[in-house]
Length: 213
Ligand SMILES: [Zn+2]
Image (cartoon, rainbow, N blue to C red; front, side, top):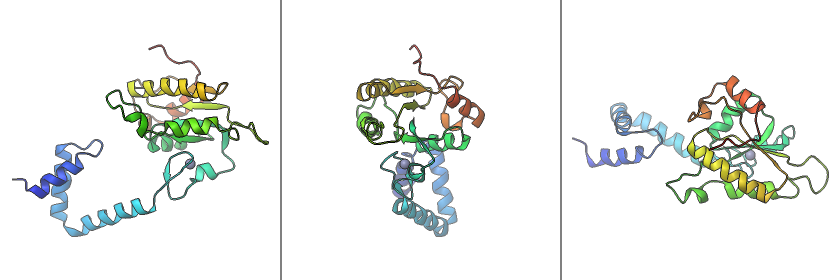
């Protein structure tokens, strides 16, 4: 028989990505068996995570400093911004070593069944970023922004988001090159789980052609 406390925690855990009833139950009975030590460690780690993590207000990745180490790094190529859906996608691309530009993390994609998804993700921040004259290199010296690489998952929500972004970026910053990862990632696949060779070749062979829908 599941007590009200178990039911309450079940409903919280099931809000986590990829956690269903069975997994949530496994977690709960594990904690009940191991007792306070593990639960307190988890509570401490979660509190520390929230207390010490900041949003980078340039690229919207999470880290312990704002701006993040990539946005601070003078060696990164600021003429290219790679747009990703999730922080894990940024990590996947960084681990290939094939990209030396900077990033923009949307923190999600547009969802056909969620009208609020447009407000929830960092599209406005991206459009502000691409239209700033000093970033475009129109003021002062230095090389300005020349290319936006849309590196979202090759699935329906990713495609819808990329089409929307391409239209908005071209309106906000005419003349800016907008490219996408080359084919090679499996359709419906997840960029985070692509192997380094496939992902780096998709970055190197990126294209400016939108696929026909
Ligand atoms: Zn950053």
